[in-house]
Length: 109
Image (cartoon, rainbow, N blue to C red; front, side, top):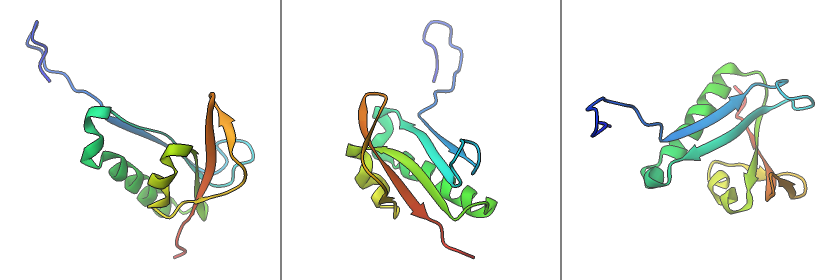
């Protein structure tokens, strides 16, 4: 993007995802997908899907655990289900919003 006042070029982040290895968080022996976010103006461009697929590829190549988990907000459960994530355990509150732990079993090589 160009700043109209200065003419300077800048880069705008439109999406982010965090992936952590097993053992990063105490008691979690799986990969963890967290902090997936895509700017509302870009959500119809499949960027969320691309970010999740990239995280899956990284986890499969890293091969330190057989599964990935995420804490899905309830309205986003269908998004994760499309990748094969399944609900695990009861719903819970996280940061004032209802969530569901979801787990994807990685294919064994």
